[in-house]
Image: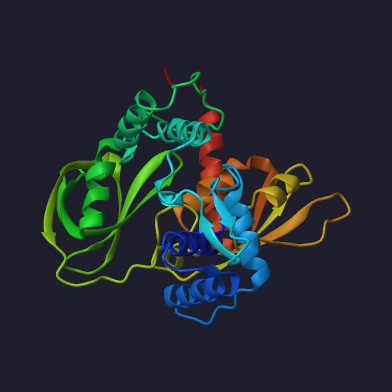
Length: 341
């Protein structure tokens, strides 16, 4: 099926027009109707050429997956388009074997994430489709594999949190941080579920203090739905995490971070920046480079930089450089003694 949303909208409008068999759909009349409905749907002026309209009709006539196998014919006498089958609609077409194969592949990928909402529903729906008009076909192996950890704690909270977000309800949560002996009670307005390094987090707002909170699902002990939201809370995840590596957001403002990378590490950073703000210098004589970022300093950033080992050195800020040096010296001291059994 077409991937372009505007094209898909045009196809639906053409389909709706051709189902109205009492109207002679000449090229000009069909062009005017599609243009008018496009402008109404999009809320802005749209220009649809005759050539584009004819290309759309040609595409709709094509066989799936490129088209809809639409039986559109042009009457030689009236020069009007119509459906040869008066009962046809692109919205009423049954799924093809190609559609089912794509669904099986997507479901195979989703199944890797235990606890995701709707996976069970989609599985049941697919089984019903396969047991009806369409053959099951050979099993589809997982071709695309995501790094997941099915043993991670807290995955069973994903579905109720997802439901609370959809229903715009608060959540009453018993939360026990790793550093605390006793759990704390929170009422949170949930906004988003986010995964980072195989650990899931709830991004929300404290219902009383109106402060943003980030809660790891593996530290939630109890969770129950609360009341419906009384007012809308503005939450812009893209802006909140614009200068963040990971999920923890400190109160400090973002600052420039400069690192040196060895020639061996440079291609890895060039092909997979660990943050979108990355800028690189020209390569030095030995192939090394300097990379700069605009970031808020947090624990996840430290872990990211330490994972590069000796191939990366923090140049600035001095506070981050000293912090990593301290952690490296502690690690060196640990490895300089006899292992503790």
